[in-house]
Length: 466
Image (tube, rainbow, N blue to C red; front, side, top):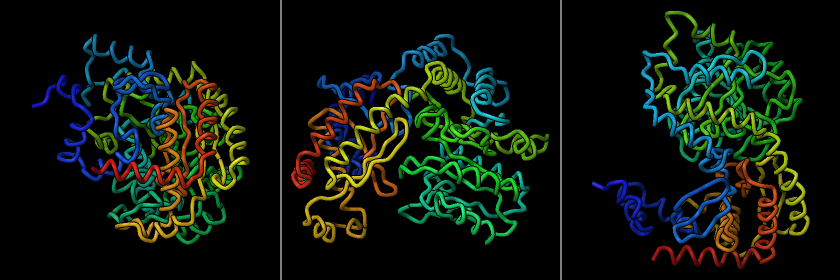
């Protein structure tokens, strides 16, 4: 058996071999295409990763939404160390938890209106499924349709996967899922009319982090009015966009008096350390569904680790940091660099950048172009890749991501949804001057021809297989 010491002494080749044998060999093949797949991280702090060879990497992935607080925030570490030092109990369901109680109260303080009632599972997908389950129970099972957007991303469990709009494989899922066009109120109205009186919930991401689109104020207010009129439970998925990421504490909160019936959150709720999520419901909705002796445990038994002690203690500190350090303002300071900087690059390199879009500290760069030979490469690509209409875009974007990492020590990523934009989503502890350096680095990468970047990327991928 490996010990903790053994694990920490493994070389990168040994880690690859163990992944091939015990995790997924195709994952090794995919990730070693990039520089970051061929190296190991020694430690991480703030906005930086330090590799085993001492090289520092500016992490602009933001942990795909998890790291608003950056890596190993000192207050988060102190909260967890205090919990362990005092040997606090990882709460049994039959004991009340002061951490769960305090965190639930703080969530109600942060959120507007009567969004007061919390449930605290582990992952964003669980929070989404819990919110939809709540909506179904609110209508006592008498309605059977839930509506979601065509570009939605809500998770990869069987239920949340069915509620996600662009899955690559058709798994079984919950029944009664209908679809509307993102941001199109007439499309929502038509879907509601088509399922007359049978819609129990509408699920929407006010800001779609996987496609870098967002709903207009007019759309969101129209959705609220429609749901109120038809007694449909309105669920806002803010799992990625919460805790200041887009320049307001939650994206929908930039619009006064706009209150969903349920909001879901996860990722940075855990401060980069804790696996925790929440759905927070309006009091009348929650109490009608679950606040009676017969039904009070119908939701709380959905996960063994609901409201676990250290997770709640960590999230309690994470929420306080986001409020006290004004994370929305930090995101807006980053936006003040990214918005004009990326707009400038789009003008300078129109053959490479189709568009840029985003808000706060979450921006997408839509890479287009590349040599015409790629059209033939795409047609001849092995396996199912040739059938992927986005194969060329993915290849070009991967080449840019790789060049940023290899040549400038900047870690970015691209989404697997929508048009696969390259994402710059820095942690909110990242200084604006560091973001400015990243914009300049992207410009230097794009100054080279996309053809040369792709050739280099493919050569590295081929050599990594030997």
